[in-house]
Image (cartoon, rainbow, N blue to C red; front, side):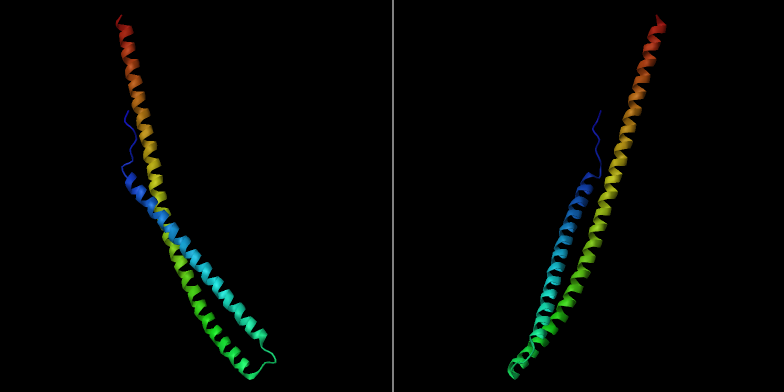
Length: 144
């Protein structure tokens, strides 16, 4: 009997590679998002520490704290935009990964279906052969 061969095996292998690549991209985007959020949290902590630190200080220090606080606010706003962008990129990576996984799963299902059809075909061929053998044996016994 000939061995089962899925004619779309190379396509399936390509889809698997594509899914794995999309998975790596997704992990990279998740890492970027985590780093962006950590940076935002650090900036927000620095801003809070700057506000708490204000008290009875000299005018120059107050001015420096104010300038530092303004710069922190600008950086925080910028970092929030970066976090939003990282979230959008993560969402896109999730969609691409899900699409690649769906494509691969569809081919795996097709392969399984074709294999079951192949097994059913082999079983039918075996039954035909055994029926033919039984018929020939029956003909030989009746001929005697």
